[in-house]
Amino acid sequence: MEFQCLTDLKCLSKMPKSHSSDIDRLIQVLAKVPGLGPRSARRAVLMMLKKKESLMTPLAERLEAVAETVGECEICGNLDTHNPCHVCEDVRRDSSTLCIVEEVADLWALDRSEGYKGLYHVLGGTLSALDGVGPDQLNISSLMERIESGTIKEVILALNATVDGQTTSHYISDRLSEFEQVKITALAHGLPVGGELDYLDDGTLMAAMRARNSIE
Amino acid sequence: MEFQCLTDLKCLSKMPKSHSSDIDRLIQVLAKVPGLGPRSARRAVLMMLKKKESLMTPLAERLEAVAETVGECEICGNLDTHNPCHVCEDVRRDSSTLCIVEEVADLWALDRSEGYKGLYHVLGGTLSALDGVGPDQLNISSLMERIESGTIKEVILALNATVDGQTTSHYISDRLSEFEQVKITALAHGLPVGGELDYLDDGTLMAAMRARNSIE
Image 1 (cartoon, rainbow over the protein chains, first blue to last red):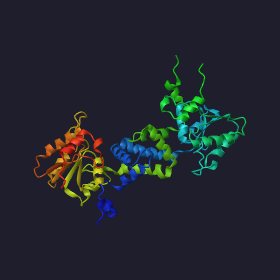
Image 2: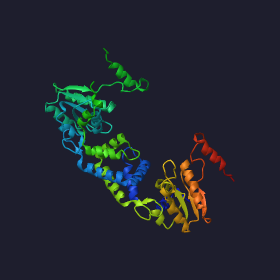
Image 3: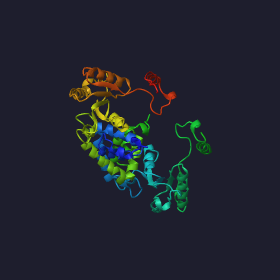
Image 4: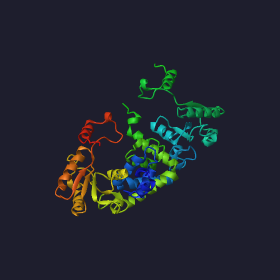
């Protein structure tokens, strides 16, 4: 029985190519970017090749510049071109409150919302027994040092409302309970703004009901 | 009445930033890549910053390399590091058939399907009265020159099955009718492989019915 051409690897390797391997390699790397897959990466490369001056070259230059200059802030773990980062260096911020987040993305998201003007501390993940992440893998010792320095009066736990996030919140509030002068708070649970009751899960509805406020 | 902070532009410009403008500019450029928007670009940048060596730097280098080396093939309009491109230079291909496609993406797609081993010609779009695209804006004069050279025996019109694509097909087959030795064909219409009748549009079903084949 003969193999069909489609399954015959020798045949595939001899297949004539419509473009060079340089383009292929670019597509392969671009496909690893979250949000893109092999198909959308191919489409993106074709589009960029049409807009070389306005898109492809600037993108290459900026990626290189950012890759060279951006690093982790030694104080809070934010990613920035400065070290310490813009947030830690900003004297207008309230240095007595510290908001603990899982990832840099959460820091940026909270900062965009403009509901908070204090400092941050990025843990770099959550405790997870399954993934083998213990307290030593997170930025918890640097957090303890910041709090020991004594300027912080309130710690806001702004971790994700997932099981791992809440476990980590509990762990941190336990560790912080030795500092009696520090108030520990957590983000409120409730209806998301613009959310419809009908589409919300039971857990959120229950939390919103439990934390109901009196309207005066 | 005082404006709220959210709508006050002065206030926004004074707003403390959580990261430097270099990162912002990278996000802005990346958000222009098709398939990504501002939100997914931000997520992609954060992910890339975590994988600088394995993702960000290689991506920057490959983008630069491709932007520098890739250009349009002077014969067929394909995008490649070589000029003439891999397809036009491949002696194993059947140089007597020419497949006309709208875009380079279509050329790559047909070539991946391995159902065709001839040459290609990329029009660079379709005729469109609304967008002001006439025959002079497409690679039609170079197409006529290739056919006048006399080696081509069959022209396959592989344009999209859209109104503009079919209009352009008609226009090209009209122009080619003067070459009596050239056979003009078009891709078949019918059921897509793996497609279910129930989900297909009426036009496709009608075309498939009209072009039905006898099974022997």
